Image (tube, rainbow, N blue to C red; front, side, top):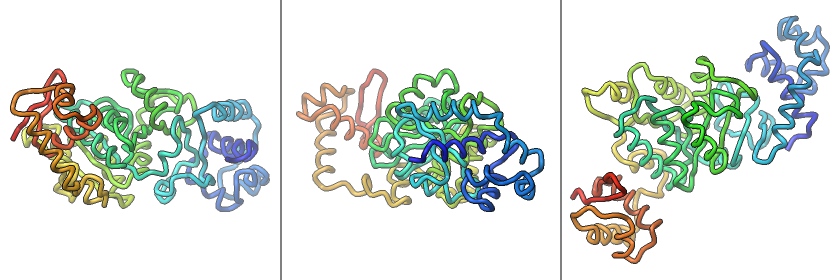
Length: 357
């Protein structure tokens, strides 16, 4: 953990109006750490940035704002991570434009886990939302942390699925870390702040602004080993994330859909461009080298078959299956999820399940 003086210097530079990430990195490359940048004279700074920005860097006008961030960072569950921190995510550090600061709420350790970006349409279909949640749950159970943007539709479904597994989820915001947007996802965002991780590169108090959301997409892809697009129209912002992922050397995956649905056209375009087609969780896990769900032991396969037999061909709920099998609800739920992803079981309204084969 950095000393307050070091962190304050980072914060001051990051809050300097007009000082972008590229210029900030040039200053750091020339002078060293932020404290050394702030100790340089105006003439020296003006050799790297404009005289106006040099003057802003050396002014004391932002001292109250810096103190407010330090106070926020000292709150339990909050943190401000800088490029100099040892636990700054290596995958993000290696991207062309890594944020100088990351504002965090929640489980900081999730940044060190292998991540998978799951994104898609805000105006998703019921099937797309179901696919996003079920696939994200399976990936999270396999140990991948689900990374998305807290938007309506596919993003929200992916976060919910991620929270159901051991991998949990990371929400990357296009606002300050203290503003959960959109309002309809506020409850979900608070849950992520407690059980997962909220991440933002934007200063505290930053409101929703259209230009921030495409920018945050590079962080979503930068924190992940791959990017799965569940549903997307041809003009979807999800395709920006997919493009950034490809430029960052990540694997890009897409779930196909109906040729008649506008929600599938973006995914089909990605597949034509070389994205991996995903029909099951195993398709993606195998590509990423995650073995947890690839080859279940014989005993697990036999257990799945036994559960199918106990399910029969009539719709049944989890409590009844627990009574028939003698297994706990958690175990039965995990087995049903795998059977559903394998296409052997379908979930019905009211918490019921039914065999499809």
